Amino acid sequence: MIRFSPVLHIVSLLLILISLFMLLPAGIAIYNGDIVSAEAFGFTILFTIILCTVLWLVSRPKNGTKHHLRTREGFLMVTASWIAASAVGALPFVLSGAIPSYTDAFFETMSGFTTTGASILTVIESVPRSILFWRSLTHWLGGMGIVVLTVAILPFLGVGGVQLVRAESPGPTLDKIAPKITQTAKILWYLYLGLTVLETVLLMLGGMDLFDALTHTFGTLATGGFSPRNASVGAYNSGYIDWVITIFMIMAGMNFGLYHKLLNGDIRDIFKNTEFKVYLGIFSISVLIITISLLDTYGGFGKALRFAGFQAASIITTTGYATADFDLWPMAAKGVLFFLMFVGGCSGSTGGGPKVIRIVALFKLALNEMRYMSRPRGIFRVRINGEPVKKDFLYAVSGFILLYLLCLMVVTIVVSIFGADITTGFTTALVTVGNIGPGFGKVGPTMNYAFYNPFVKWVLSGAMLAGRLEVYTVLILLTPSFWSRR
Picture 1 (cartoon, rainbow, N blue to C red):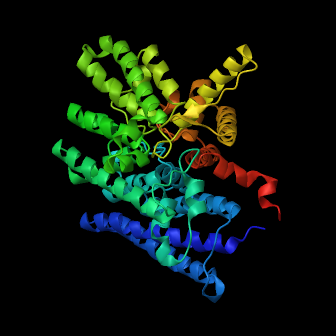
Picture 2 (picture 1 turned 30 degrees about the horizontal axis):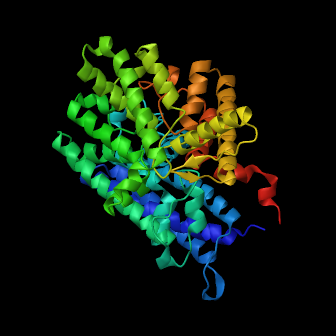
Picture 3 (picture 1 turned 45 degrees about the horizontal axis):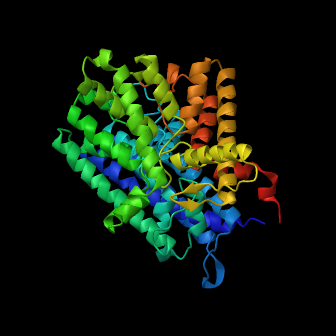
């Protein structure tokens, strides 16, 4: 039987933490003399802290013990945390008047936390800077994981967190880079913070002010894609800025555990990593094909390479930034970008999508099946990083891909029922479940999601959540066995 007390206890802690991060945009609002936005953040912070403190006290374990989450409670807690964070995070948008509709505000916030980057805003630059900062900050918090951030400080609060990180982990496996899960969470966030500072400085050297540099860094490292400019990164028309963001998008799409190996001098292990090599290989080949197809469009190899590299990096890492309307590009370039939407980043990265490791595993499994058909008595093993892969891993990967495709089908049907054409409908499903953001048709890089009716926006919010939490974590809550007493 599921115990709701530990779930409520941890969710209340997480919401208090989220509300404290709102002090940053609240300070920006006060600095800019934006009293309305300052009051919106102030009310949200006060309301959340009071309510969640009461819930935390009510759900405290008795007799001085601490809560221990079981597997099912871990799944419930992670899903509930992301929904609750989006519900609270939407309040400043509504209270400030920046997004009057709570449905739209929830959609925008869920898109932020899940690092999807799908937006309902039509004129972004007219929105108060404090609101735009909070919008981008949701990316940064959700990129590495709001639960992982909470777990990093949970030892001081008396709660364990192995099940939480496993349920939120982006990829089929959880790589522990330290003996304790809390140490792993801290190391990941230290790496994340260090890269944030580095990219911010580099963007400021390229002419961005601190606000623009921070918001674009949040969107880059979280592979989110929210920009404070209507034209996204293309508004700056800077080759330097394009290349800086391109490089950091590729870095964000890599397994963060590799950075820990790099700092420890384990360079050989990095280049032995199958997923890393395939990831760079897919990116490089895609950039080459897109560049060749864009030679006539941009009149030269250098400029074509710049636009091709940026957009390929943006799509494969599911960031969603744009420097051009790629929906107008030649079919060859669009075809490659469409393919990259099915790939995603590496496991253990901030990228979304199916993940490269799953693509590799299924491809090798298919090759083995063909070998077995030609040599029935042979014994063949799927190997990744030179090591044989357990069947349980392959079963989990196969199940994930099936559920992923099922989500795409359901979302496509729902969107199509409400009038979307097949191109718009399918890519809407693909870019929300894959946490990519822009797609083709009416949800292209120069469009937005404002035209969808409220029901569809709630469905898409659920699709974004399912995609960010690797499908299993959310869909398992819909099975009767999850709620059984056994």
